[in-house]
Length: 328
Image (cartoon, rainbow, N blue to C red):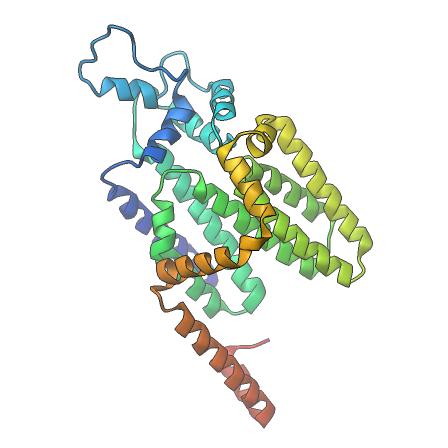
């Protein structure tokens, strides 16, 4: 019961913080406007020749909201995204929510998507922390850090597909950890395949993350000489890739023949020479946005603590430390 109460409060804190963060939005970024346009606009020319918009804002309402006769128009979403540079899943979900409230605009139509997938991401993070630490205290600390992190909250307040993509890569990470612990099974691979398809239809960079995750898993299975499980994983990824292309054929054109984000994803994947520089840049962003430029000192402190703990075990203090940390 204590664990359930603690878990519930972690989600409540996250949701309350996100509500206030989204409430604090004053303006929309051009990409956030595009989220609504690509989800709802039928045709690209929303201005009527010779028509006087009174009030003037009505032009943008036609541009960004679901108009009469266009509710639940999934085919239009597919068409808009085939002409854009991103896959369609996020925009389809946003369009379905907007279709419940035609001819109206609210930041909460996209905001609720971010809140739901933020909570789902927290669910994944808590399970990853539990698998890796076996410590309730560590799970609680990681949960609270996620719920109040400036970088995470900034991402959650941005009304785009990135929170959905964050959930899928986090869930994929959790599934890969489970595969290592329990072995590759048909049931788990079915989930991996479904999550991979949904992630690929959310953002092309999820495919890049999938590639490296499966590469590491493949190396692990090769070292363990689990050739059968490696073959099962390869078939699962082939099925996920085929299903994604069948569902959204424009994906191939986006990634190889003129789609800005798709080609960018593939180019970044192929250009191994830039990996070190990108990792350095990524480390700088994580250090500043998530840890207030203190990550280096925190990592050093944790390393020293681990070294001291190791020496204490060797000196006969293992039983005492076990009582303190609840180690298994």
